[in-house]
Image 1 (cartoon, rainbow, N blue to C red):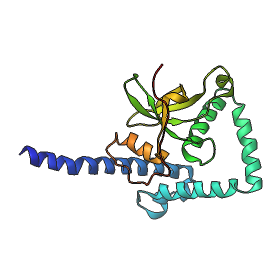
Image 2 (image 1 turned 45 degrees about the horizontal axis):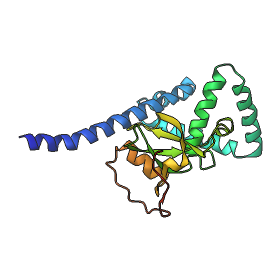
Image 3 (image 1 turned 45 degrees about the vertical axis):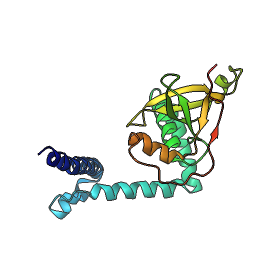
Image 4 (image 1 turned 120 degrees about the vertical axis):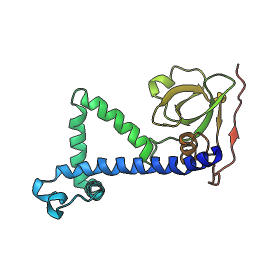
Length: 209
């Protein structure tokens, strides 16, 4: 009886969570239809509710926005709008923080995570996966030794975590891409690494002084 119950749970738990996430995503995106004039609402035009039409509208809005921003006029217009937004009290601080996080996670430029490291956390006998980020110039000048800035994400939600400055000699540079490390963190190590490593791992001096 017990093994049949466990087998059933192994089938229905991931399936149920997947359906719940899809339903939440679809229902959330369908809220974008409320931005349309009432005469243009699909429910009114079709005489029935069709789930998922909000995904099409969201995709179209994001695509058109990207096309507009990619040209010179769009870039200048958005730069001016963004500059004005940053000067709004409180709102500017929130927008700046969210933008920095989104640029880090989504962009492929120098603001993204640079490397995957192993650092000693939460105690000297344990190791945690961390992402190397940028050391602020004002902070970097305070150290005698070479330090690196690391973000240590939490499991299973890598959006939250801790931001530390660690001596470079107390880290191990991993032969692992950021995507593979994120999958390992989100899955709590259950998902195995199937991607080929780009280079040999470089192990630094890890002795604590």
